Image (cartoon, rainbow, N blue to C red; front, top):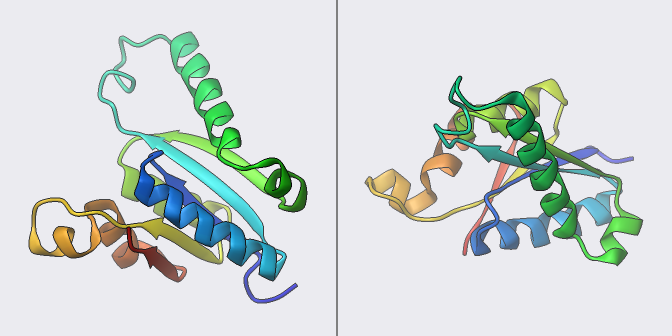
Length: 141
């Protein structure tokens, strides 16, 4: 194996995230690296103490299935893939996941938001680039 053994791709199921996933799949295949797909839900209702654990578990199962559906059959067969669902602040959950799973590279899509830095890079991507301990590749829309 090469220097890159684990590649993390966070997704919000947007077109921008799909482009990052395409890049990451190609990279992971060429490096024989495992691919980690992560969805982070920051919905306050889902994270509310009044939301039942059963509802959260069902939601997380549904999101894991949705993550799995992002890969075509060929990539499902050829790539070692892990799927994860987290709740909370997207950027911090991505950074924490990368640290906990000893991720070698994060591939994240970019999209514009409000401030100059966010317009150029994207709010979540901007935070991940600055807080992650591993290299981060940003993929433009």
